[in-house]
Amino acid sequence: MAAIKANSRLGKYRILRRVGQGGFATVYRARDTIEGIDVALKVPNTMLEGDGGAPGVLDELRREVRITAKMDHPNVLPMKNAEVIDGHFVITYPLGVETLADRLQRRVSAVTALRFAEQAMEAVAYAHGQRIIHCDIKPDNFILFPGERLRLGDFGIARVAMKRLTLASGQGTVGYLAPDQALGRPSFRSDVFSLGLVIYRMFSGVLPMWPYDWPPAGIGRARSKLSPQMIAILERCLRIDDRRRFADGGALLVAYRRICAEALKPAYRRQGIQRVRTRGDKDSRSQRQREFVRRYGRALETRGRCSGCKGPISESMCHCPWCRRPISVYRGPHRFGRPCPRCGRSLKGDWTYCGYCYGAGVQTPGTRRYSDRRYKSRCKHCAGPLMAHMRYCSRCRRRTSDRWKLPEGGSPCARCGWEVTREYWDTCPWCGKGLAR
Image: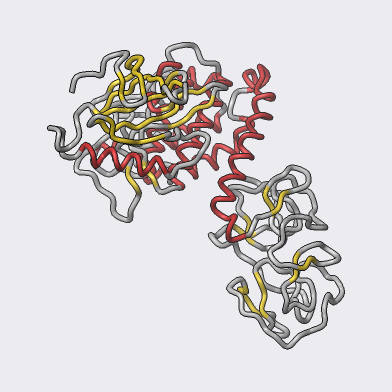
């Protein structure tokens, strides 16, 4: 199909110019004549089925739309709209400033490169958390927006992970393709390899090539900027044996967060990394809070907000997991109608005592017993039902002996033994012990 000419109309869009072209689709800068803003239009290089187009084009475009539509993350390119206009399947995206590939044509400071690397890891970790393998991680698919916001786009050949996932042949971009993906075995570890190449190039100025022997070309320049811990992370990303890489983007991000404060050499940290780290920690915490609510919010019923840091909390927590502030009196929304006069947490109709504080009896024992799917265990003394993370039996006032677990699993706190998620929390919300991530 011939390229769409400048100043031509495509529905409500006026084409301004072509900004990129691949073997599958062309991207145009266009003016939305109704909203009055510039957008990016992704248009396939062939007409749709029924108009002489390739049989699989429409299926590929629908797959990309369905994958992108369900993703919601600050570092993932959002989709504005998808529709058929004059026989063209058009996908509309926000218009960025430039691609990361364009930005790498100019000098990039170590501080800026680290900021880009962290955002790229956040994006890939989120996609993997949604069980999506991108399959085409490269600088051209990272779009820069004002404020140095990096967003991952182009999920055109992404695959949703299944127990058995195969491709007829390797798909992706030569130069950033993992060896296992080139052999038709894409996985989360393939994306980790490609991301490692992108990050290595940002700090070394060199793109490693097959056979990817370590250390690759440009290692001296990378070592002059990065700490040995960060170099070790990149070395693990670029291992030929995919079983020796990080399992997915989430595992890579956790490893990076452990050493993020010392990722750069001291000379570069003194040039402004302290200011960047403070802002980065704040952004990272906000993203962790959003991801935590998506994963655990419903199960833990995180309806409240910490009075200090405004992070999400639940009635069952004794400490804010984000800032360690004690929650002696809960003042947020309640699960049940009546609050405890001592700790402010809500009480169910069949409770005689508060299940969260050692307060006096709050109501006369009744004969009616309620069934509730939130009851997870039984008191060892009176066989009364217990909800997760209750500290006291609501019928006999005895302290519970259960070591409560998180709904999707976690690791036990070293002090109280109750499960915590070190991936998201800084503090154990049950006993207040600080957590090392």
